[in-house]
Length: 197
Image (cartoon, rainbow, N blue to C red):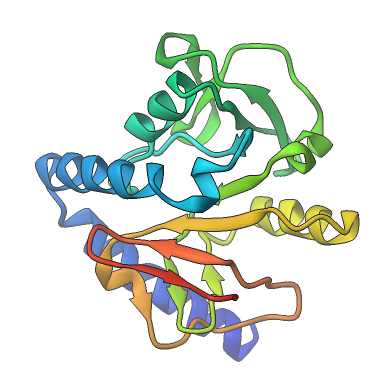
């Protein structure tokens, strides 16, 4: 294991332990604030298509945001985890059309659009555990979103990459590997930070 990998694993454990201490009330309150802030971000106000995800457990909540975007007429794409950890995509058709999937995830029940559907997004909401002052994101380590980001880079497209986090998850430094890509913005209930002009 490389030094960066062990540093990443240690930081993941620390941040997941902090999330485990959150009550469902804490998570719900933060989700409501995050939805209100995120809906007013220029990156989401201008978007016709947003690739997002359904938050689970103590992740910063996305469900109210997904519904609000859909009500606004935005096409929301949600990931479908494939056997090789890559992500297929399907359109979000409402909470009643989400189904339980592997790893406790919730996925859309509708037709699959293929792994390249994410390239249609104007904005991509990425799950994460931390973002640092350079915009480097720490994920859970499964590599699914590394593949998504590599696909976006290869395409030459430049959608806004946004991460929703809790305030303590904006850290001084995230250990970085060659395949890591910075994000453009992070939103917490307390602050929004941007990493490009």
